[in-house]
Length: 313
Ligand SMILES: O=P(O)(O)OC[C@H]1O[C@H](O[C@H]2O[C@H](CO)[C@@H](O)[C@H](O)[C@H]2O)[C@H](O)[C@@H](O)[C@@H]1O
Image 1 (cartoon, rainbow, N blue to C red):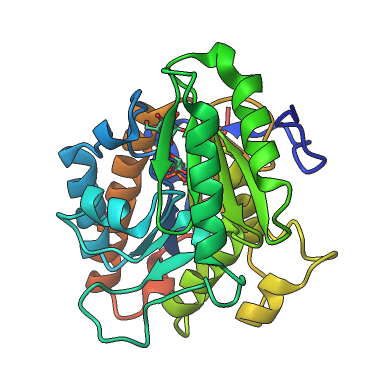
Image 2: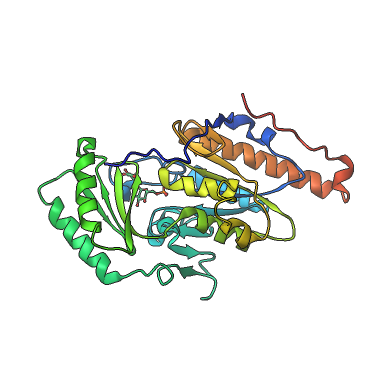
């Protein structure tokens, strides 16, 4: 079974004190925020269907949006599930690891799309893979199979000893399909169309959010699939792959924040979901203060002094 080790995961991230997150930010800079769901906004549960994003977190997101900050959710969940979990707020969503993107649930067709055409998604193949996985899992009561419109996930959180078995089943079932690949997550292996990538999804959302003011994207995520997102906004791939430059026409210097310790290419980390909430609250304070300062002055640069990065210990 492959491990989570990856040649990109070689940076020791710096801890951000979540309560002082505002101290890391500059009042002269416009920010936007990208948020992962599971392990970042929602605590883990044995069955994915039982997960919720706490009402307080949703209301925090809404308050940040009210300050004029764009927020996008980037998740491995299907669009339908993500929308249900986020039903009390309006937020652009890149779901199924970027395969399904919805900018605005009320907008007419044209702004929302799925990537399944581009990625040569074949529903017949997906059905065959799902069926084969169901067959293989019959002897094991501790697996949970998550049936999504564009992928299928095999969860073994109920019995972590089944990790190797889960990988063996999934690898066997995907191996004969050239357009499919396996993605690892926390206690899960998922069969996804090749090319599904949270980094590209974030850049698609960012391009849509971009105005005359250059935005500094902040992405918070916890899992292996979030690494592509960290790389995209931190421009780690700029030398080898110019996708981000080409998409936005300018370099991006964003902040990747990993939830939890462990190898990551994110430059920063916080310990857990509770700290994510504290960090979001600090970000809200920053946005509210910034809005007040900007509204009080017609020439903001006359009195606003740029903050320096003091958030690290
Ligand atoms: O990108 P994310 O929003 O982090 O979604 C990644 C996967 O999250 C879900 O699985 C994880 O959460 C489950 C519920 O807590 C947990 O049981 C499982 O062990 C985790 O891997 C979701 O079910 C998957 O579809 C997402 O791909």
